[in-house]
Image 1 (tube, rainbow, N blue to C red):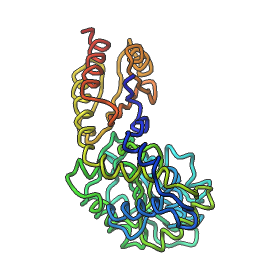
Image 2: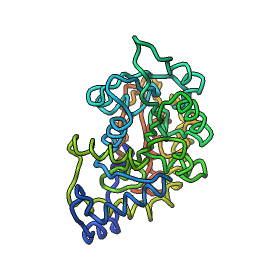
Image 3: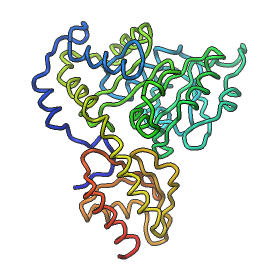
Image 4: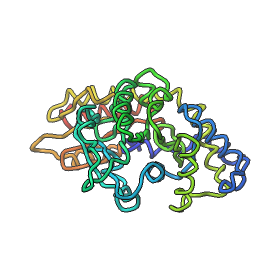
Amino acid sequence: MIDLRSDVKTKPTDLMRQAMATAEVGDDIAGEDPTVNELERRSAELLGKPAGLFVPSGTMGNLVGLLALTWPGQKMILHQEAHVFRWERAGLTRIAGLMTHPLPGAYGAFSPEDLEGAIWEPDLHSPTTGVVALENTHNRAGGTCLSVAQTRELCEVAHRRGVPVHVDGARIFNAAVALGVEARELAAPADSVTFCFSKGLGAPVGSMVCGETDFIDRAREYRKLLGGAMRQAGVVAAAGLVALEHELPRLGEDHEKARRLAETLSGLPGIVLDLRTVQTNLVRFEVRREDLTAPELCRRLGEQGIKAGAQSDTEIRFVTHRDQSFADLKVVCGALREILKGE
């Protein structure tokens, strides 16, 4: 099967499996796992932050970061289609106790002017703004990137008003590759940043939270509170180290695969796709036909050995990743032409 549903569907490489089998381990809760310690050190270095914290998932990473930056009852400003708002089971309200203030914005980015207006002046009756959240790359916008300049400008607005900024950087290395910059440049203006090992980097599990040392100390306490503290976690951290060494250099290949898929789709009848959104490894498009829905298209692709998932009656997201070859993508493009154009 050719799986286009998500880059979390990748299997560990042989190098990852070997590293996991031979990893030196210890008690991570006590700070005694050398492999976890090295992964945290290396990750923080890549993001240009003093410290890192290894967590089981990106959802937990975002949540411990928000808990460490805010107090219950504060307001959180974020994009109206943010992953932490749409896809993380409302942990930011249920657990962190934050009120949300969603903002609109093209290609996943709200404007500095809208952000300025959303940070209310202190008032006895209103919540204070506890954090601003950015997302890079932006999932619902189609994998679009926030540039260094955009990130810096938004952070300057927030910091001028005394508000910290958290970056959900699940695929921040994809953004860095697409923009031709170092990931640390994208993370530099922010107070905290997360990224996932199990998405574009292809490891089986785990995410990282990076920031100042005192922030990471607080986040570590919240990781324990949420049940995310691990013991001999070096077994899985070893795969993350392999991912940082061997998977970062090849992320551009995934972007090229996505571009080829998008260019094929854009020329097919009944497909609505904004090529400007195809900046990394995600391709979001709509099926606007009377004879075919998005779920039906996915079903027909499945009959040809291609797994895809509809996100509504009209919307589909394809995700390219390491486990697909360029030959696989030719098969997918051929199947799309056959189904949608009758070729």
